[in-house]
View 1 (cartoon, helix red, strand yellow):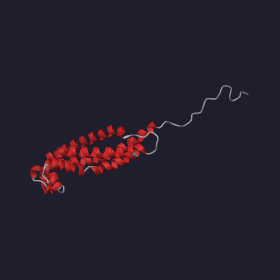
View 2 (tube, one colour; view 1 turned 60 degrees about the horizontal axis):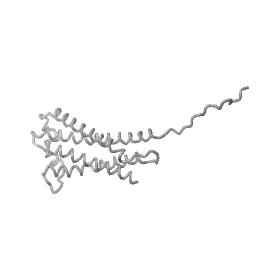
View 3 (spheres, rainbow, N blue to C red; view 1 turned 120 degrees about the vertical axis):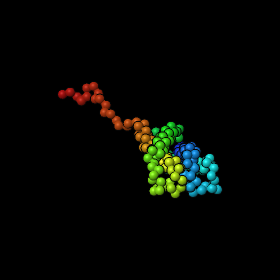
Amino acid sequence: MLQSLKIILLAVAAAIVYGILHDLFTVHLCLEYFTKFHPPILGGTQNPILLALGWGVIATWWVGLPLGILLAIASRAVRAHQLTWRDQLQPIIILLVFMAIAALVMGQVARVLTDPANYETSLARYYVPREKMLDFNSCLAMHQASYIAGALGGLLLVLVTIFRRIGRVPHTTKRSQPPAAGFPPQT
């Protein structure tokens, strides 16, 4: 039970750390994404660092919790060949790196695909001036990419955990023994 709790806490902590680091980057890309596109937090602060810390926790703990629960079940259900939080540390780090790469790639894709001529019909027009449209769309794409990569990667991590455990289970099928010498009797 304690190991399951540790796995859940690891997933929640990893999600929060990733969220804070991600938001520390994106808040400097487009402050308006946090101040106008999201509801006010921490007394309506405009401080980028406080916004990144606040939203880094608020927007991620709830993603890490179900992942942690599923990962704990996949790691600990059934007594044979259980995995610990230490067994999940490297796979979670790999997932976070994958999420960061997806965010960076999609942020650049959004920059390339954003046509400033479409400002009047874009979501950005409600939140930022025209000159911030590229930054806003890039920031939005980075956040969406992180959520999608995290959800899909998290489910894949749960499946990989199950298959890791299945691979550790020794085969219990009995092999037929070769017949003893002289058996069956020769006629």
